[in-house]
Amino acid sequence: MARHIMSLLPRWSSRVFSVDLDGASLYFAIQKQQQQQQQHRSHEAPPRVFSAVQNHDRCYSLLVCSSDRIKSAKFYCELKDKLLRDLPPECHLSPMSSFLPNVRNSLVKGYFLKSNSDSSPPIERLLSDLTQRDPVLVCSYFQSEDGQQWTQHLWSHTGSQMMEIEDKYYVVTSEAPGYHPATLNIINSDVFYSLEEARDVLKKCGDIIPEAESVLELLPSQAEARNKADFPVIVIEGLDATGKTTLTESLRDTLGATLLRSPPQCLSPWRSCFDREPPLIRRAFYAVGNYITAEQISQEGMKAPVIVDRFWHSTAAYAIATAVSGPVGNLPAEGSEVYRWPSDLLQPSLVVVLTLDPEERKRRLRDRGLGKTDEEQELDHNQLFRLRVEEAYRRISGPVRITVDASPSADQVLQQVLLLIRGKCHL
Ligand SMILES: Nc1ncnc2c1ncn2[C@@H]1O[C@H](COP(=O)(O)OP(=O)(O)OP(=O)(O)O)[C@@H](O)[C@H]1O
Ligand SMILES: Nc1ccn([C@@H]2O[C@H](COP(=O)(O)O)[C@@H](O)[C@H]2O)c(=O)n1
Image (cartoon, rainbow, N blue to C red; front, side, top):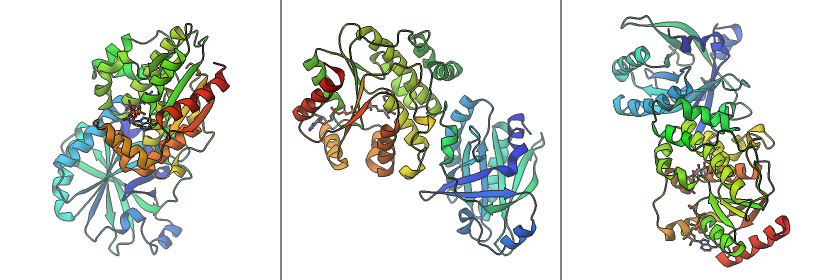
């Protein structure tokens, strides 16, 4: 068995498994022995993920586990495409993960498959094939005669074409953890807290994404030593179509300020390329964008006030809200280190977050008539995602942040923000 898969096994029976099914996360755990209490449990209903499974149905899990996190991130996305393309249509696929409770970076992601027994030969051929070539750990799940007890069986690869099924574990119900499992891996996988961490990801993907080299060439050699501006720096934040562009341009004209944005203009040629990459790489791209903008702020901020259209709040809030699914309560708790401001990133004098009633925001998006990114569509369709982004915006610590209702006319919003800026920044 490959080394990276072996590394998961020593604490295998301490792992919790989570399957996203019908908008909910369903949890189960495993035990090596069918102990007394376990025998007793066999009279209880099986964990919810298995409760809807019919007699003779088969379940499988695939966990992506490469020691190379760039490879893992890329392969996780490719695997979904491959499974959707090659699995029999009656096979149902759900995202899943496995983690060690309270152990940071212990989360591994994968997919959970359910199908009827007729489809199992082609599925098992496909899974067998995957285990020989790719960094996946496959398990099958078997149901006892009375349908009440499930067992998990790890697959191992013997080196030939043959797959052996070894090591049996009993499946038991597990309580939902007090926090969403994705929070275990957010730091330096979804949100980066230093230029070095983000740069490191781009360096490592240079061989598979040639565009990363061009981005790296634009980076400051280290987070700007000066890291401050003589004039006030005001960041305008908010969801799409809340009026950031309209307001930042008016502020530039009224205050005689310099207008900058993150990601900066110089990264535009590569943005759509990185938007197609998995979160690890995409977020690293936006993170380094903030450092390039910070360097521009330091330079321009010596001459005039600076207005910035999106900055760190956008990078962190969208990343956290995407990594964690479900209701706002699944976000890391207020005060968590996940919301901290990177110590090497320039802090603006003031962050103004524009908020807007969802219906009015949709109306503005419609009137504007531009194409929507996947994330904009997600904001539109998924009310929970929008709430998570807004709450993450609110929880991010660091510079002074003020929320402004952006529903009045553009001029009224401008006047209100000018009042705030003059009050807070002595302009
Ligand atoms: N206060 C306002 N009242 C009514 N319409 C507005 C107001 N501010 C902006 N708009 C209009 O709403 C639309 C979205 O505004 P704008 O492009 O400034 O938002 P944005 O936050 O920069 O969006 P994005 O993040 O997607 O670039 C535009 O058509 C703009 O003219
Ligand atoms: N500093 C930033 C800016 C943006 N993003 C990501 O881009 C998307 C929104 O940008 P728009 O230009 O469409 O307004 C949003 O999905 C963010 O994920 C970022 O991460 N950091």
